[in-house]
Length: 243
Length: 375
Image (tube, rainbow over all chains, first blue to last red; front, top):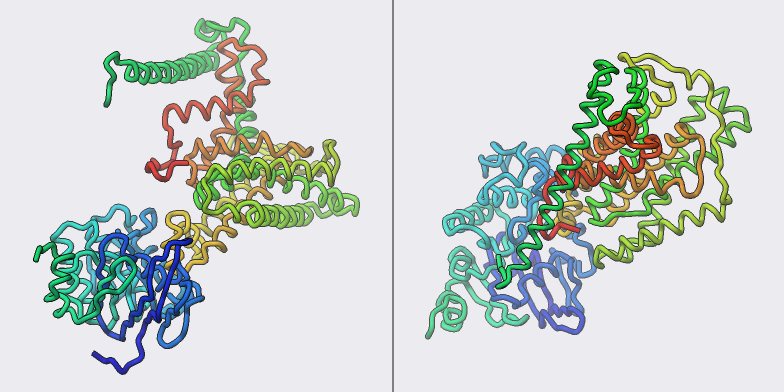
């Protein structure tokens, strides 16, 4: 990959604690512009904490979060969102009582360039024609697949350079999971870097360039997707295959 | 459902259900009998149905009924404005801010002070409209400030603790504000300067004879409600408020400043209570440190009746509660032969609350809350 470029988003030796509990242990990550990377790990491996730390909802005890060369460790979430990071949360988490349009507009909450916002809205309608059909409906009335489109649209409305995806396969029917991963690839093909956190290792690695495996807060594997797919340890622990 | 071998738990549940059903039926029977008797009186005072339960029933004339209704609606509009504050804070933070009634009292008190100052300067009579605007604006500023400071000092440090904690705190804040009022202004009742006579005159409107003061109250409430609706539904701030009410974490992810939005919610609720305080002054012209208690509790009932968290519901709840407590004693209770009906306004107001909760627990316009959202 473009190893010489400046990473868009970076963890430099990050440690986090919840009280006395040590969650992330000296984690180093780097996401480069235009990449599609994934972080794999089971329950309680520190995946959610990684995302929260990247977004500034959790502050590391030591180490730094770097956004496009700038240290943002102690900056607020909105500061980071404004500089091009956002997340599609697990289980979509739409504002169910608000209309689809209002959900999309909230995605652009920090922006004031009206023309750009209108432009991005059109782009999302092109990407997801179904969203346009449902634009004035309350988002809680949409089907799971449609809600997933709105959740991605809402994230794209902040015009991100890197999109974090928290368990995109969670809570969706198998057919929808496939469709969802196609949407992720489609968004990626528009030049947005994607950092995906997944339990479904097979699915994630089939579309990712690179990946990390997190185990009890430590990065235990860091390799190309193909190499990870072939890795016997990973196959044993995540793909449910006994050796 | 698990049933023990002697079947006791199951039968106890049924017993409660039967008891509640009985109360529901009693309510419905009382309301229908009262209504039938009232209608019968309107048709013919000698009608046997009209004097069935109360041989001395005199019946209401149409103008009397309309007068009661307008009085009730004017008070109800005031309850509605206060109810908005309960409902908004509940929507955003999920607890009932019992000190909100005292914010209303602070509004009424500051209105009393400014209007008396203006009256001393001779402006209250000469330039009434200007003076009233000035009084409303000061009252809004002071009650907004009260609500914002209250949030900062009493509630923000408790963010994240179980909802019962801020609820109990709010009762403490309520006592604090009442006692502050006694310390600063003394314990006695204080009065507003008398209103200009042209204002108190009755005017006819749509077949109703309405006193000018009540017209002012209804108009002010309507304008405030329209302003609030615009703020919540049509502005970016309002969208942020609704987003924070639904999911604070995701709202923060959108870049919304959650703390600032919560402060805005308290401020807007406080402003509405400030307006309501002035309306109280116009309607009753007397204010004391406990003024906030009963209207506060009734406004809370109105918010629950309308469906807590729902702003249109809060206003509708206020209006229906006001109308019910003004008309029901003479319309429903007098034909039933209840003694001293005009003393029963407050009882009626809370009976309405109980009835609505029995029939539709989520309130008239409320959504059913999921298990986790319940307070």
